[in-house]
Image (cartoon, rainbow, N blue to C red; front, top):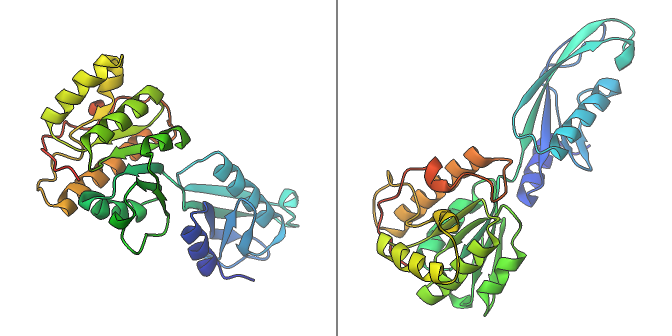
Amino acid sequence: MHNWISALADLQLRGEPCMLVTIIEEQGSTPRNAGSKMVISATQTFDTIGGGHLEYKAMQIARERLNNGQPDTHLQRFSLGASLGQCCGGVAVLLFEPMGQVQAQIAVFGAGHVARALVPLLASLPCRVRWIDSREQEFPADIPVGVQKIITDEPVDEVNDLPAGCYCIVMTHNHALDLELSAALLKRNDFTYFGLIGSKTKRMKFEHRLRDRGLSAPHLQRMRCPMGLSEVKGKLPIEIAISIAGEIIATYNAHFGQPSASVEPIKRVLPSSRRSQATN
């Protein structure tokens, strides 16, 4: 039988959510080993906590929680008896721990120096990243696991293919392209987060041009520019990348389970950034 440790590593490498189930305690006529573990995905199980109806119930609960997208750990107490295939009474306590849950689908437009610092950070989080640029030579030779490299002469067309609730980061080498991407994203208006790299001056210019295209103030309010946590200072690419990654983490922690245009504007959740950011 596939060892739960290697199974967990394989599933996490593939980005497939699963549940780690652990026996915390069992008292009965045939007690199982406390600490026994098994891994349960949507379609597979790995290792065992002793079989029987208790294991069947554990699989059922784990898959219900996976299907419902419940991100929290869960402790459940079972009364052993005929209902769980036990001839005598007793109790069992199981811990359900979600693993590999994708907290955010992220689209990064641009492959410049800040993006090259940012994408590996995002890839190390429970996120899936689409990395989009027209310049193949700007991408590093090694693309992190969980990152899809997309080379296209029409980056704006990729906006239509983004999932609802996507986290969108615009940091291309071209201000005109940044503007077109911003307009396309704001017209869709079903993202969870939209950050645009640049200064407050850039924001003012973009807001003026976007208003001329018919975009309303509530739409523009959802654009985070400058983006990143203001508490993280510095102008180095890695410093800017860390501040942006921190903002992404804060946002998906605040908005988990709310991937729609109805979530609060990001400026209500996070303090305004004072950073004047270099463009890619």
